[in-house]
Length: 511
Image (cartoon, rainbow, N blue to C red; front, top):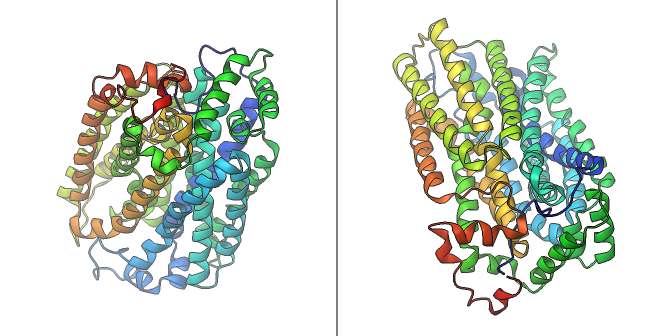
């Protein structure tokens, strides 16, 4: 399919398109799925450092944190059950993604977002009302299903509704909302930790109902994407929506391109088998590795457990939530930076600059922790503690304008339409799998590897930066349906996967 591009931009730079209020509104509503995901990530780290919560659900951990000298500084929180509370969400999301791939294709992007909202609402109720560990885990699993559905539908929705020239920026709205969700979660934990009577954690978990409600209501208001409508055979409706979101009457060129892409997509009976074809190899390899690398920067380790991490460094409980709030704020601001630069400087520039910055920041943290934080002594002076926070912030900010948003953007904009939904599924699934592995392993790794855990992540940052230099092409400003011609066929390495269309007799179809 020589004309096939993919992504969140079926509004080619060559197509007429105004940036309509409808597009902006739809994107803000849809991206609230990110708010929910971020809130869930941020809330679990803070809640698990609240004594009343630990006392009720994880008495063993509670005892360890209360007695000094009993446990190594690095090992206080090393508990499989506690890690399961955090990571059950990702395991559920991983499985839900495959169902979501189906609903995204068959029922449309809009309905899939609605389903996600419903899961979120029910999961929140279970969590806030939990009286035992089982209820808590069931709630997290339902939230996980919501995450699986939302992360599948939202990036595609944003990619398809956005005009090409601001596709990157609109897509990053999703990531921006994840970071805002994390920040809010940190602020809320900071407040609820002060509640007398020990029910603060219920408030923390319950307030997830707000973004959950937003997504559910929002998904009823937005229009479905023209790509999705056309893919399901509703051509007239698709064209009407296209006129509304582009704000121009002459949408024929774009409409025909989507119809053509969708016709090709219809011929694909087995989307996942199709994904393995040679001509989809570059996109698939990049999508999978970007997700793995995104997790192996160590970002989630730092985000999930920021309060716990800062406590290990010897900040008091309050101070550690405080520093988590600071890192959360840095995260939000830096994501805004990427919204500005992604369609100007381009994807590669951001990834390469950030690689260097993340590498240096983590080295410094590793060195300070290696010299100063021993198993039972902790002589991190005030000055050094501040340096650690500054370095963590430097790390977080560079992640937030590179691997954070681009890990989702690049896969969603490079697959051709017939492989898009399946491709996004594989991306989300890989991401959740590795998020799960890291969430489940991090506290144990911290306990066993001590400060070397940061060297472990530093090594990976080095590897992924080399990967970008060699294998990731620049995709800014390329209309989604033209990726094959303009990006893959021009790339020194990937073009060899493009020259043969013999596994596709209709490949020359609309070259």
